[in-house]
Length: 90
Image (cartoon, rainbow, N blue to C red; front, side, top):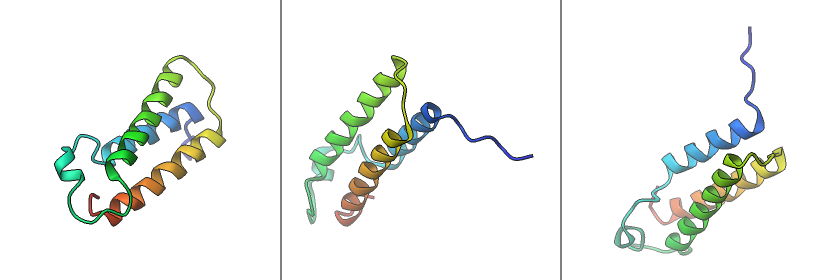
């Protein structure tokens, strides 16, 4: 028997949790801003944190989420992850 896929809101919450675990949101500014800089890691982390917090609030309020929103957030997170990787933070 195959497992059922989660509904979109559950998938969004799971993805948000995975992003929060995988990126250094709590790293001190001195650590984030050292070494090479291919884009402002500090600003990118702040932007993504705001996006995630916004989605968490919307989900808590019962807003309907579609696959387009899930895909958009994934794309943003992947791009920011790539920049952070170039900067040596992940």
